[in-house]
Image (cartoon, rainbow, N blue to C red; front, side):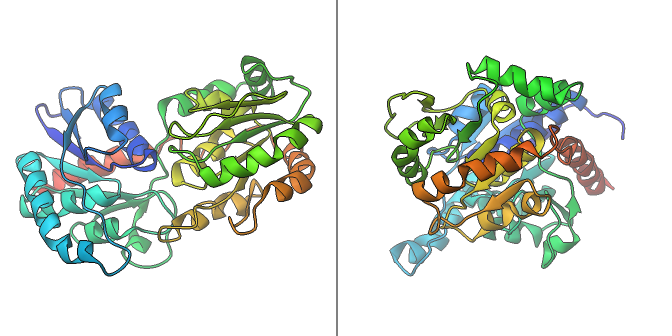
Length: 366
């Protein structure tokens, strides 16, 4: 497809890094191929996009957040009115644009409806193994539907499988490591100040941290140190920061995730779609503790890595500090027998989505 100038592409997918990071990666890929086009983002006033999107150099326009209530309440009664107002706000931003690309989350539902009424073509991408309600809605309004992994039922069973777009630093780290994965992992440990001969555990709780995981790690810190396990723990920016202890270091947020993944022998984390994709690209072995709320997507996201022998899943009900201490030696041993290299399944995901975007725009002009 020949390049055209002056188009506007709208990206929707706010709230958490799991929706925002793939959208940002796709927007960068689009701008690299179509530098004259304008890429803008929809967000809500309270979402993480208010930090990540401007930092990436893209324009952000906020609309009201509309949350689907999980039980019968006043919020459920008010939902239609709030949705109408959000759709109206989104339509004012989207009208006249050339394409809406939605990555799910509450925000996307308003954006999909606004685009439909404004006659703007829609492309829907689902990162999770289980489709959220907003993307199920969006998929009824377009034939351009993509998924990070194959989905066996519903409209998304016919989706184009693109993979999940990776953050720029993770993608760059993968390609840099391909010349010598073993050396890359050794150098990453040195960069973090770790002893290359001691096992290392990376603990993540998602973009906001996990109070539950933080509590269990706090109970295990002393014993992990006695075992000689080096620990880097991302506790979340809104949670209390524990004091460093022996081989244990706590930080509010890890800015260089690529190095942390490469250095770790074992990753303990929630199983958000982005975390699973990043572990696949750069990690070795992972223990996933799915978030026990939502529509169950986290429990499904890690299944692909489990099938490849690179992860296990343990429910929050069964996970504890004692479980970790009882199994950490076994987990480190599993990691040692895995290949040093990561998986390349998501390296070209954003390029595949860009091709679909071009098809959606072209299809709307015929």
